[in-house]
Length: 256
Image (cartoon, rainbow, N blue to C red; front, top):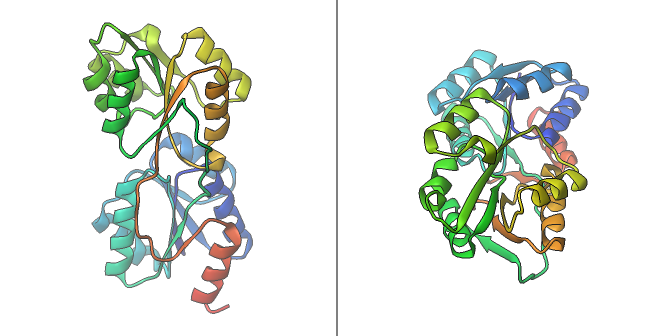
């Protein structure tokens, strides 16, 4: 049974394609909402984070001949654990990395390489700052931005109880929390920007399927500064940005 780490909507589509090729596949996700989406698609799924040791145990339990890593582009810990687990278990590792986006130079577009850099750039720009980077790194931004009289910090994230609790613990006011499930249309992005009088929007370069392009383009057209966190650099080895490459590689590994 192929073990596949899933973290994006296109990962689900790839898992379906692999299953349609006649392969048994076990998908692995972190959250219950992601698990529900995969279950509805008819895919076997397990939920929760995996350490290297736990991943090795799962590989051996399921007798997995290969590990496919289709987790989110910013899931650095998951990538590292998957590569190490595959290495220790002695099986091939395949990375599916959704296609990145290229942007023309723009006076309002600021590309940075880390969350801390993004927070400092937003602090420099000031105004109404909308975060669309999720809850995992929220504390980095609250540390740098909360308490600055020239900044209003608005956080957009999934409507989960743990996210709301984290916002409360870090001091983000309820009126500055947008608890919504994406992806968002261009019209919705524009409406939210206008409602919160956004002057700075912070986002990650997650790729084409992550609805990042619409988010950025609509912000720039409204005259909003965009702080874009570039993808972490990683040496994946065998990596593809299209489904056919993954499927062809699997066929070679499985001797088809």
